[in-house]
Length: 69
Picture 1 (cartoon, rainbow, N blue to C red):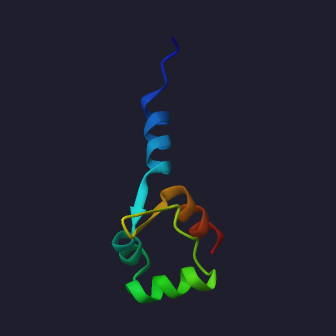
Picture 2: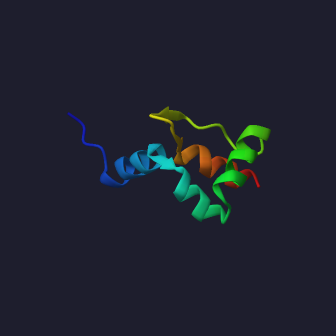
Picture 3: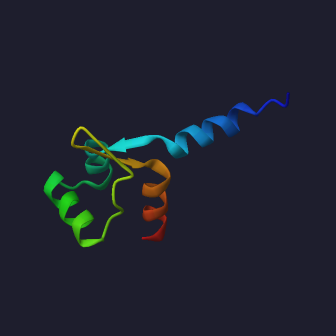
């Protein structure tokens, strides 16, 4: 069995981890309502997952969006 380098595994896990609204708000310096407006208007990616009314985004989607700005 081939071993996967730890740094590769960490990169994969970090890239696919879920990010919640408070973390995004802090990262962008915006309010919850501003984030909601940006998602609704298409200026920010849609959540990848909504569980129990809580929105979550994949880190890689946020990173891709930030890179395009």
